[in-house]
Length: 116
Length: 110
Image (tube, rainbow over all chains, first blue to last red; front, side, top):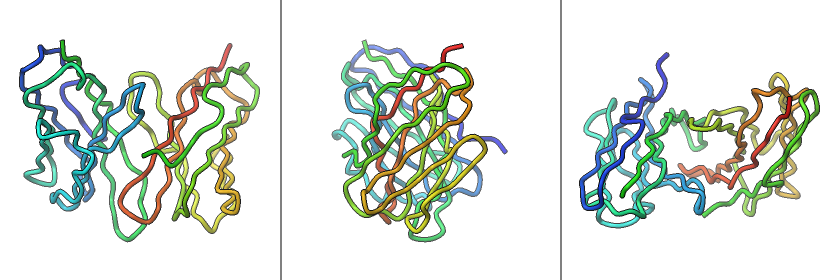
């Protein structure tokens, strides 16, 4: 089984530019999560989708961040315009939610984003 | 916010020794999960222990859960160089979120 696939693995861009991160979850999973990891703040949940519908985006830092899940096999996280403080590793994770409790999440290898 | 807090923050051991790390949390949970993160990689699920379980084993891993103390421990026996990684506990409070701690960085010296 292929795991969660994220692209690109690394992204370096100048502030003000638009950044788009991509994620392909594990086939059959119905829950998708976007996280951001920094040394200062650890792992932060940005947004959660269930059955392609955004359920909770309260972790999205500000309006510059947006996420979409047009179908069960693809999601994007967009930052426009990007700022140096957005530099972090962004992870996508997926899981199969069949009841009230959380099943293990499967993480991609992340996108290391550097905004100059 | 981080509900799980791992202790210690960092641990250095000799190959073959055991490594123990602890996780404390604040509110009642449905289950608790442990994850490993190798440098430059995503988190990998290791083990899940439900709130009505006290101990669980998986290979060289042993996890305990004490809901009265709101704490869990992860023991790695006979450590290997490949166990060098950061280890995170994550609590499931019966909603869709997992709350991750800040992690314990384990270094296994050859």
